[in-house]
Image 1: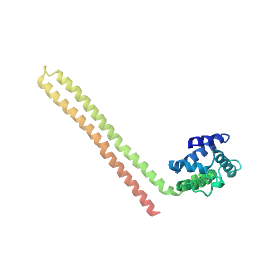
Image 2: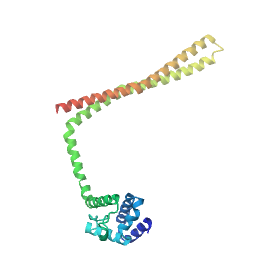
Image 3: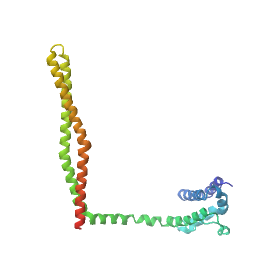
Image 4: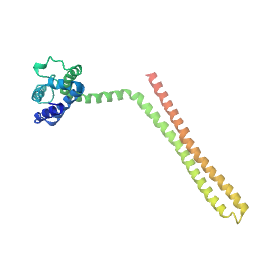
Length: 240
């Protein structure tokens, strides 16, 4: 019997078990066979016995693990028929058996570990309370710096953006008006075209300045603010 037929037969024999337990058992032994490797697959299947023997071993493991069938015993999934207990499958198979025992213990005690999550939360709360003399001043400093940066940079950004748009729009309108008067009033039209191009250039310059402000000055200001807050934190820690 090959591996696929073997595992299908085991799954069929365990069809009366809860689906979660049945899936976990099948997955466990599939991993077992994967770890043993294709070259050792036949030996592993022989050592596991018949599908009926393996299914019986799983059932006994479930019964021994918990009266309410909440887990596996230490022999659980990794237990083999007694007549093959002393047979060495392979180095990987032996390691897998030991891992199976550990897995059975973890399965039984998983509920207890999950029950400690409340204690972990309480510990985090206590640590936050103890660290509040440091955290609160730093948070306050960060808030003040954020307000200052917003008060300084937001108006500047809006001013440069508004001026850039106005200059470009006015220059463009003046350029086309001067161009329309070029044949009627050549001298005045040429002056108007020159002035409009200067105006558009000023708008473009303001836009480039805004890009520089956002790309260079603002990140530098943020770094300075972070250094300032870090200095406060270090001073506070030194005094503690």
